[in-house]
Length: 244
Ligand code: ADE
Image 1 (cartoon, protein in one colour):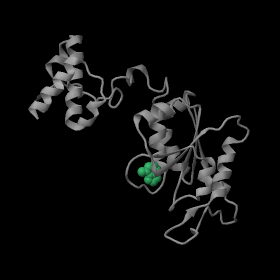
Image 2 (cartoon, rainbow, N blue to C red):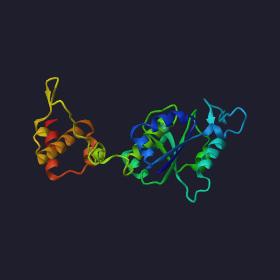
Image 3 (cartoon, rainbow, N blue to C red):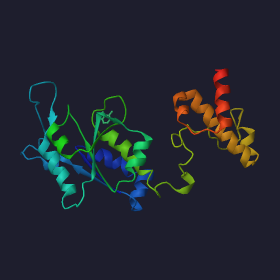
Image 4 (cartoon, helix red, strand yellow):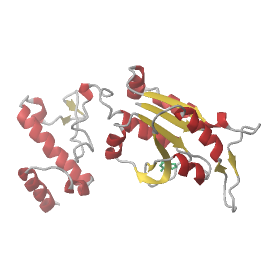
């Protein structure tokens, strides 16, 4: 997958995205991330990319033309339109299901806004999808872009090694994860649950499911409505409800 990120702060993204798993995925050729400095496409001698809003109001607005030129620089000569995403608090909330869907695209363009906003005309012309990473306001789209790239890239086959298999982790099959433990077996006088140490895989799997359901019940009860549960597990939920 190719990902182009249009931004005024490429250093911010480059540092984060060349690290760890996403960095390795790029070295392995599974993804290719290219940050484009919007300011390089400024058309005045001060390299200014923002201006006062028409109609007055607070702050500055990013101009249409530098963004459009930056967009053209990454789409020139393509026979298709890459899915173009604008990061904004007004967008649809990003979810695991969004990450899975985006992971199937061959080319994404992410636009990071700044200042008080972006000239609506360029948004109308290039953007296919507006994404928010939550109901809070960041100073710019960069941190949101990093979250979207990270969550999307790890859903591309081969990015996670098989040991890191994502089939049973939080938010994958509609349940939160079960608690994890590693050595030592006793820490601060607290023992790792006996069942995890006895090598009975059937019992271990049952324990993991039960704890995942319990964890989901405690922290995100609403998620249980959409989780796939067996008859026996549904009974277990009913028991939890009675106890709580
Ligand atoms: N830009 C500013 N705030 C944002 C948010 N919550 N999500 C995505 N982009 C943003």
